[in-house]
Image (cartoon, rainbow, N blue to C red; front, side, top):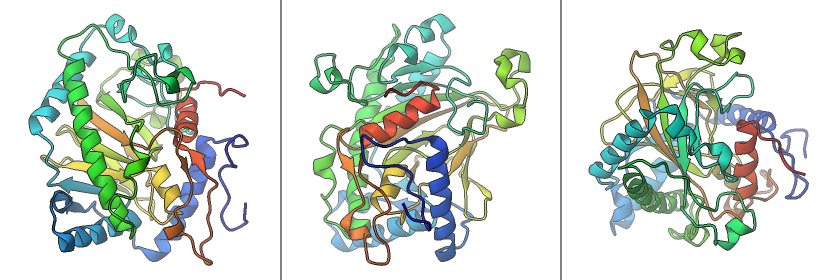
Length: 368
């Protein structure tokens, strides 16, 4: 720990991560980065098709664009991604089908039944911003689908194990097909991030052979659509502290977000302004997560963002949270350490980092 940059955790086995501590560290990094970059007013759009080519010059140019976006904004849109639009459409249709079902069916796969937090959670059951009173959305979480005989699941490692699936068709098949496409796309983006850091293109690939690969189907009602009596009593006290998702950064390495055509995502710049990131047809939104910020020693920005659905429409989104193998200890990359910028973070596994913060967001008491 230093006076200039508070350490947010200690080595594994001694660490006590909290959302508040993590947020404080992120704000310090944001203030530092604001000295070197003006507050952004829009999210850049990148064509990542060079990652699917043998054009080294084009790849290097894209790497420069990725690096700039990660340092200055922490977010960027991607086009030229080669994801089949039919897979995306089918996944959104499956999401809408699921959220239209009865509470009984949705609760049959409640996240409370899963030790690895897979399944359904309702309105205000997750709270990503500890200063707020809950997130005004419902969601279904899934990830790499492993059966109960998997040794990592038996060992109690967060991130590995079976998904819960409702008795509903068509649901599992289109969701898993889209998830598979996101795993492939994330591998391509890992190559882009590696190049942006001056690393070999395949640098990260040995670390994502069994990634956690969490994905969420999310449904946001309009911000003002529900009468207060429809919300839990704890939400009645201060409705200004309730929104689709409160201000937060993502826990994993990076996120690949697909949204419908309803605008609601806002990204916070270094001047504390909320900048709209509206939907763009056939594009994904990619953002740096906490683990990538840690890897890069706070050079890349895990930027705060929130969802406020001010429209009169229902909103659906599907974020894919690209992580690493669960037990990989993520420390600062050698490329990002210098005498002027020593390592700011002790290594911590993806499983410990993500699992700890997810449990806190759900209000689950941490074990010893």
